[in-house]
Picture 1: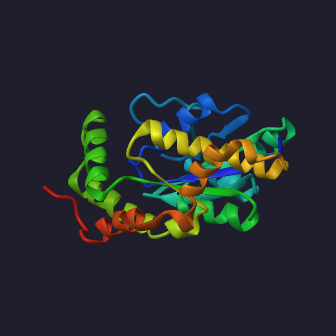
Picture 2 (picture 1 turned 180 degrees about the vertical axis):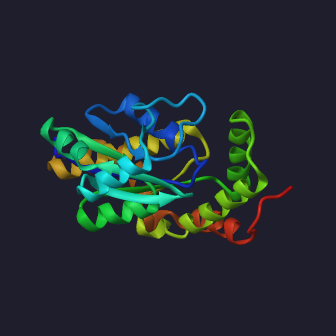
Length: 233
């Protein structure tokens, strides 16, 4: 194994967690870095499964000690990836999957330009709003202002899509999972120096997701966020 770092970013509500969980089921030798956060657990979240939930004091101490590969503050809560996960994965000959926001992704790419970055887009602003509202209802409801802020933040994050190597539009789970799988496996093949001639379909799927091939559909999605600054009633 080559020890590739894969970065996946997406606006809240885009289905990134579901996608990464599906990817980990079907792609071997791919370790997942669990982030540290100062926010409280939501719903059925458990410490050490979705996140490591720590106090602001503990997080600041880890930051001061240089324990984070990347960290960021989002919605007044801190998130960070511990450096030890990278070392542990490399030591076991595994690739590492980072589920981090655009701030953290920029930090990792600056330190590790060879890392592979993937941005997950919702199919439209309307669909993202629906997903956020549905999730809010299952979590006991959120104030309209919170939903508005999340959509505004999503619009700002999406503006950074062109800084990523690959774009995946999460409109259908099976298709999106197949695209993520193709990206990971094709990058492994290229870096291993293996014969690529027998993996044409896999490579073609990955190439369609490259930033330069994202095309008009991505521009339409980005435009849908620019057209409206607040959720519909």
